[in-house]
Figure 1 (cartoon, rainbow, N blue to C red):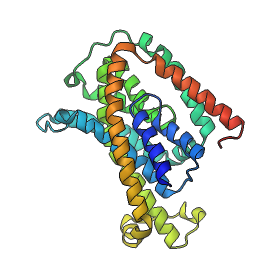
Figure 2: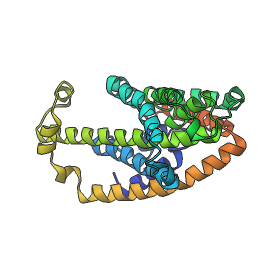
Figure 3: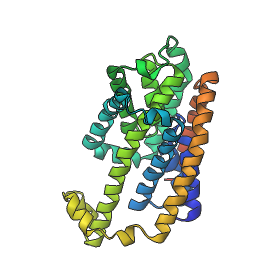
Figure 4: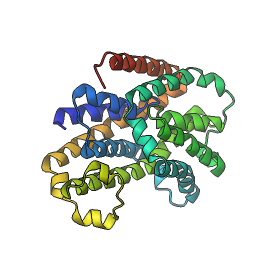
Length: 293
């Protein structure tokens, strides 16, 4: 991955992570357009810059995250993140297959866009506007909606959880903010998993283990960690790439959050629905023409 490629992907991530347009879809589409090859480092880079973007939430809402006396806030996040963690562990093969299928991702983008055109008319009686009024069952339901974004890459984690929140009578603002809060534990878990996957890939390469054989092997974390070649996985160029990507995605995500909350309260979701439909259609055309694969 070149510096230019890392900059482009980081900008795309920072802009799209908190908008209901799917950062995953945008990165999966951007990669082939700018010539990024798929490997363990690229996969880890994409998740880690998502984590950097997520840290912008902690910055903006830091008072929420340091109110240690309000234990219920942290319990709600734990309750909400559990469904996605379970789904990620049990359905890994399905998720990996879906993530590699741009046709599927583009269709999900379009389908999600159509729904966003009508969401403001579907949920018109939402009056819960304080995080303290979000019950544990409501938090769990929002977490179940997050599972949809895990199973359907291109749906958008942000869109799924915001819709989940609005289905529980949360206002647009609070649904968006709770979606941001939930992103923190979710992306920490995803980053840890991606880091471990990168270590395993490096371990298999170092031990000349074929990919087909690696798929059926079970390796203990201790063995992987003790034998992985960190010097080859984290070269100087890799570290520089990480630093640039994290700083960019963090700063741009800060701006995106502030824009999104303000825009959402005044105008709703329709523009994001139209954008998703247009973007998904363009991707289908590019796939049909063989410009991306």
